[in-house]
Image (cartoon, rainbow, N blue to C red; front, side, top):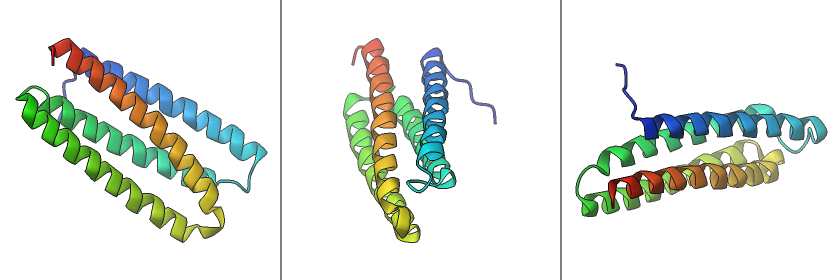
Length: 133
């Protein structure tokens, strides 16, 4: 099913792809200089997970923002809580299965979390400001 994206969604996904390419390049450099810190496969798994969750939640929030502001606030809070629980389960399972690299995984995940959350908040704020909310 083809999905038609508005210009603000296209801009978000272009920036999301750019950020992902940048973070992947940065990871390749770090793995080259510090190979014991983090496996590139694990890092790519984290990036893929973050991109999927960020994209899904962003699209959900864009759809909900067309309705009543109170509904948007409730869905935003639930989506944020759901994301945090999902992220916690994901990173704890990675740290459990790859105990020898748990420190690098946690630091890498924290950096990814801040980057992708900042991106999502900036674009969501732009969208809400353009709607006068």
